[in-house]
Image 1: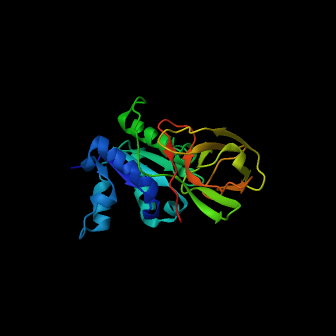
Image 2: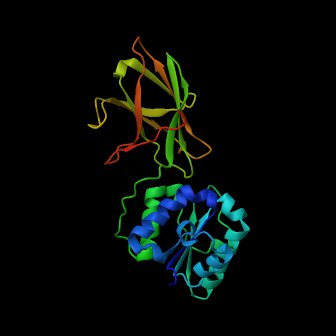
Image 3: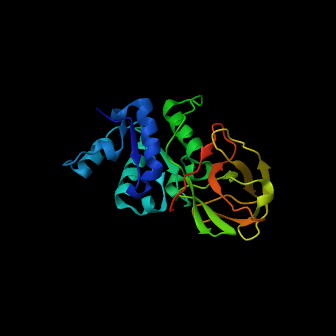
Length: 260
């Protein structure tokens, strides 16, 4: 059975590519998707299976990152798809997932800028391309582009870092959940970077904590430019962090804590 969709990517980019593969499998079925993690079985010839997957797919999604552009095998995949696309045999759709320029030969193609729009919007756009409409809205769970960790955890001062692992985060609006009241804590962002902030009494029913909103002014979070936030004790009440929430989405999204 010919695959309808081929996902061309570098192995190191699977944290971004796999949520897309799983969402497409849920909608179109596993047999319709060539994704090496389930399409190539132990003992199979990799090149042979790749050739089978590229025989007659309707769509080839090329996930463009720095590592993917340096890979000879990935280059073979997307250049093969580009040739077939010029003959009307397939449709090549670049998906930008890194802060890299699009290759000149692909600039004539409309591409999905997952790096700039984020995983949710990008997933929706990929599904829409395959379905040929703009009405479907997936509800993806799992992969989190954003994580946070402690850089310093002292008695009078705590420093945390909110990091984007793969994609630019265009909406850096966060709620720091604390078991503290408004007078207990002072905030400093990225060495004095201006920000909008506010205090909310128990804003999320599922979290037994108060919310301190933080929104940096004039800058997105990127994989090489994280957000660093200092929390300073303003009185004798110790600072107690309960978690970090990404903005005011419904349902709200708790950012995973790592490295602790």
